[in-house]
Length: 138
Image (cartoon, rainbow, N blue to C red; front, top):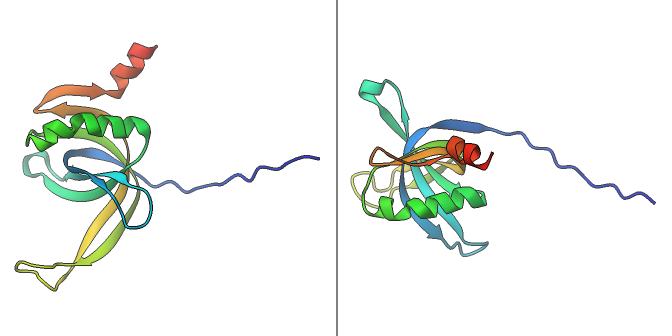
């Protein structure tokens, strides 16, 4: 008797870019398992007039979680942490502003999974490079 293993197939939506890490935190939902979360302020537009798009990200994968935890002291110390990132499964979620000038208004939050980092710099100094890591392992 042959056993058949069901293969799951997925459509991947990956977004790559450069951005700043902030708000690294452990999230403990009422239902489900706790997870590591970050905000990525992705740079877009002209270099001399860059704009930011903010993504609220669930950190996926052991290596990426380790890197984010290593970068946490720098982020908490208000140092500039710039990364080359890959996001997956981007979607928008609405919310209602609770206070301030926009209280009661609807806003949109972009969410994604932070899958990986190609590199990271803290205050312009190299911190991590996937290419250097692979070269060292070779």
